[in-house]
Length: 222
Image 1 (spheres, helix red, strand yellow):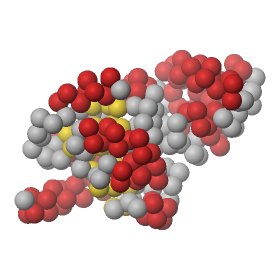
Image 2 (cartoon, one colour; image 1 turned 90 degrees about the horizontal axis):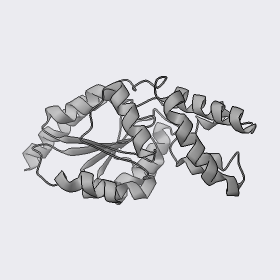
Image 3 (tube, rainbow, N blue to C red; image 1 turned 30 degrees about the horizontal axis):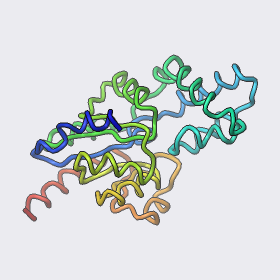
Image 4 (cartoon, helix red, strand yellow; image 1 turned 90 degrees about the vertical axis):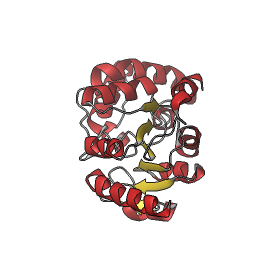
């Protein structure tokens, strides 16, 4: 992935604090209103009934996974392309940050670390969301789901990955990163623990205090 490789050029320049990865949908942003709007527009254009309320209850996996519920296999590439064309005009403005998202990213910086976003989302759309909400990440890497997220996490030397889905837990574990989970998406706290999350927080508002403790303990170990 050339884009990831170019972003990773500075990955090992040695930040003073930890490199922390964050998932995007339902971790940093509540993408349900925007995604629902985009699906409704796609349904209106194609005449295919899409239950957008149902679709936004299972966010996390790649777009192709959800579209397969509504379109035959041969139409999915076309629908992926059209959805991504529709998305900026319908999904960016209605999408808010999750509680504590900005503060969580700022907490990483306050510890002298690097905050990266690793998401299954279309990378240009992910960047539009972050820019619109004023959340500044040191790198944004898209198109990676579940275990594949380990590719970027390892490339950037992330020691922590924060996500809301069991797929995020699997990605963290594959990268030998600490899995910090928040049950703010489709997966419950129990599901996240069962999947192997090392830490489960109620939401990102708890993350800065947790990170401070983590960094203090890490400094003692050093």
